[in-house]
Length: 271
Image (cartoon, rainbow, N blue to C red):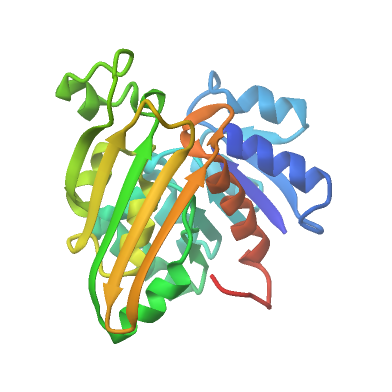
């Protein structure tokens, strides 16, 4: 399996390390994609003797079979449809980009036309298999509360406009409470899990999202409540933040790796 990675951060490093150890069988990383020659993915690619590219044309020259997007919503918009139209499987980690109905429709249509896999992993949460099953019978409500230490919410335009000083926060503070449709775009690097939950369940407009900065927390904490005809589900995840990026849970990084492992597998257990 020829793999390319869009992004040069923690997830790209994790992928390269595990693939080089042989944890994914015969998979090999053939390209790292960055925005420019100054992007951090370039030294990572050079260190491991992997092609570094900055354009779609350059990426296609490396003939990947699977591309893992681990960069941003913009990267999904720039590369997603074109890759699927070429029949190349796409694993999207910035699932929040699919809050855009037009973009999601184009991605899904391209996948249907070519048969290429469009895969949005579970990320830092689970229970999506239960949610998908329960949704078939009818769901009354789905809510997710995303609570992280203040450091995870720094540098976000929406939070800055609220005027909340993350350095001096003493108590848990709600930064957003509303629909996933409205909230996901405000936190492009933090709440992609709410997008995945919406896509697997009852949609962006009916899924409720609460975002909390809590100085008492060390772990990224996600609490999901589902209510429907098949019963009620309440589940809590306490995820260790990525050592290099407090906005991302370590579990989400490994969820991406698990998704790649399943991309070409004929046998799957759960989601």
